[in-house]
Length: 259
Image (cartoon, helix red, strand yellow):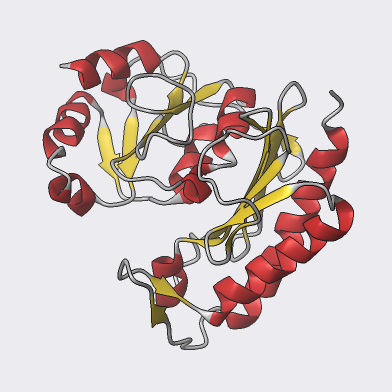
């Protein structure tokens, strides 16, 4: 399958959607609160509507699932023959509301149960990373590669929220890994996975993960020479948890996670 058309489309759509968010950034925007106590803003809704309209116009037979407006099909798994676009219009809404520039627009395209194309755009940083299976991973127009660090003792680990590990009763997992690493940082949400894919950190771990929060990252990490999946080493966006790392460090990381 020639995925180049999808790669061009997803990159342009993520970029244009991201530029739209900048009109709402650092202006004191007030959020509403969803049932799960997470914030949502007019910027989230308008951005998702923009992305949906572009997809519907370009690919009218495809399915769409977005964080704010749900799915054109009532399912949260990969059981469909239709290609499906998975959207997070603003990943890192808390950062967005605080005026911190680490938020992102995330879009993934799932084909036959696997995400084959993905893009993540960080508008306030003007960083775009996009990939398609077999076509490489591209970071602002140049090839992206994971780090060549050979062991966890030289690696940097990051996460979105240590508090989430506490809430879910798995803080020991994060602590075991941080004890094995050279340094632990706090660059979280989608930005952490961008850092892994571009060789700036070696390990990103999240204890809670929705599918729209991570849809672009299987092809992005794989094409950059890394891994994205669950804590058992399965390449999936459906586990409710996530791990991003290099192929070189993956066996060492999984061994620690199994203990």
